[in-house]
Image (cartoon, rainbow, N blue to C red; front, side, top):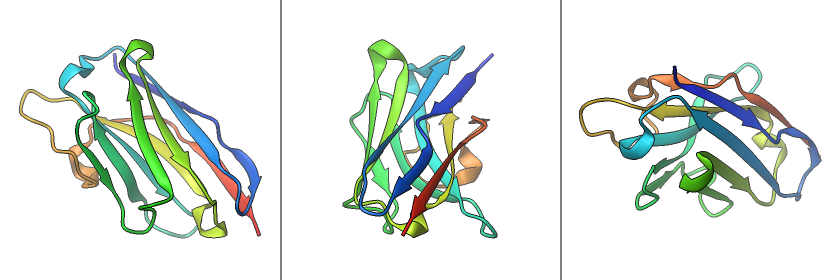
Length: 127
């Protein structure tokens, strides 16, 4: 049973930095692609970043590129999302997701390709 558990969210001020964590278990992650998505109040869920389990390939949404770093720690079975210079528009529930499939996964923000999801962690940025 694949399980993804996010942590690290909270109330922060604009300009602060934050590191979100995703603990992954129960799956064959060696060929997986991991992603972070977010959903702001009243808006559709959108992709933020993605990374291959190997860490070789990454993808970032244009809206966060330059402020966000996605990384993976294979020894800890964990994926991280570091956000710098937080802005009020970063306020959202952040979700960890995984592509685990028999074919080759794609390092992308295309939501439909991800077949496992965490329950999310709230990030609130005050101005």
